[in-house]
Structure formats: structure tokens, C-alpha cells
Length: 318
Image 1 (cartoon, rainbow, N blue to C red):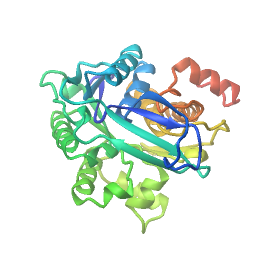
Image 2 (spheres, rainbow, N blue to C red):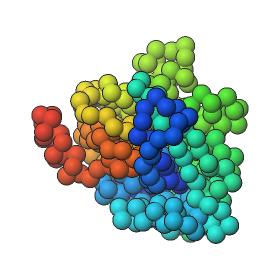
Image 3 (tube, one colour):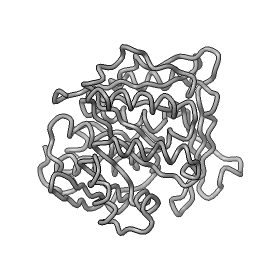
Image 4 (spheres, rainbow, N blue to C red):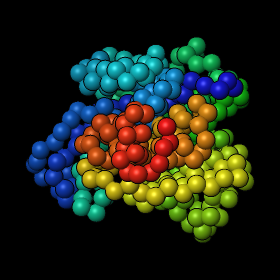
């Protein structure tokens, strides 16, 4: 693989509406903002493009205003959309989200049988041997998406491309045997894993954090970038370990912060950055992401991140 592969993602594209009120649990009439372009793979890839990576998004949106909104945002931020299908017979997927003071969220997804799972993977879109395919495991819960994701992942892996994975091990998804088996295969084929601390706890309930990391690194994965939310992050790989302290920022909307972290990290390591620099900047990008309402509105560019780090007194990471 060349030093700068195409970074691709495959999965759901949708728009999201966010409640302005907390603790209402989507049960009460209130003010919402939206439609915000969304979908974990899209948030991740939009951040990769903002960081200078060459990208291709594979997914589907409807021939409607919501679909126009998603395509316009991705295009404006430099995401390749040659793999995005416009499905005339299906509407764009939609999600609604509401927060609690504790940080917990209620979601309602209108995803199945929308344009989000009615797309095809173009045969000639990717040079498989020079592709870094990122997979958000939350996408594996949809049968149609899972089939296309697993087929594409096996092709990229077989041809010598690289795989990265955000396990995103939601308990409601992991109760499905097919989803759990698919996630385990993706993780086994991945070079980079970007779990959260809750992912490790769910996947390895009988292991300490350190033992879980060692278990993961004993297989194919070479680097673990561990997201600790409001407690910062840790990157382990190639005999190195780097711990990054959290940034204190006003939290408006945490949705997408992990995808923004992952997009920054993968973009930088594929451009040759050290694990220390990639982790520090990813940690900063994740913090910036929570300061704006909307899952993709807090995505950042290199100048934003460098300015933020300087203002935080974290040293020169330029």
C-alpha cells in the first residue's frame, strides 16, 4: 500500500434532528434543530477529508431535500461521493435524538428500508490494494448494510488493503448473534481499532483494561486508540503508549465526537504522523466536536486543532 491510501467508509447516511431540551426523552413537544447531515461513517469520513485525506463514501440517500443536504455537506468538505447512490424510490434515512443531564441519549432511527440501505457498491470505485476501509460497527445492525460492509471488507483485506474499526459495541446490537460474529471478524481483520472504554468493558467483561488491550494486540491489530470520553484518550501500539489528558470544554452535543476523533487519527497516521501527534490531535478534535449542536457541525480542520492546542497550552503539535 502507498503512503497515502484512499480512506473509504461504507454504511448509513442520514439526517438528524436534535432536541434542544434535556430529560424529555423524545416524549414531549419541544424545539428541534435539523436536518443535520449524519451517520457515523459519514461523520468519520467528513473529518478525514477536512484533515486532508483522500476519501470515498459508499452509501445511499434519497432524491429529496434531506439527501441534497447530506451530499452538499460531504461535497463542500471534500468527501468523494462517487459511491453514494441516489435512490429515487426511497427517502433519506432520519434520526431523532434527545439528551439527558447525565449525558445519556434517546435515539429513534428511521433507517431500515430507506435509501440508507438501498445502495450498491460500484465495482471500480476503489483500488482495493490502496484502500484503507473504516467500519463503524453500529452499521452492522442492519442486515443489508452488514452484507455490503462484510463483502467489501473481505475484498479490501484480501487484496492487501487496510481495515480500521470503531467497535461501537451497543448492547442492543450485540445481542444479535450475526452482528456479534460480524464484529469479531472485522476486529480480527483490522490494523487499527478505535474502541471506547465501554466497548472494552462490554467485549471483555472479565478482563482488566490492560488485559483487554493486550488481547486485542495479540491478533492482527497493531494500534489501539482508546477513547475515554471526558477523560481523554490513550494510544497503544508498536511498543509505544501515549496517554492524553482531557480538555475542558462546554459540551453542547456529544454525538459524533468519537467519529471525529477516529477520522482525525486515521487521517493523520495514513499521512505519516507519529502515534503521539495523531493521538494528541484526535483528542483535541473530539473535544472540539462536542461544542456544537449537530453530529457533524463540530468537525474541525488542522488549523482549528492547532489553534485549540496552543490555547490549551498543550505544546507545539504542528
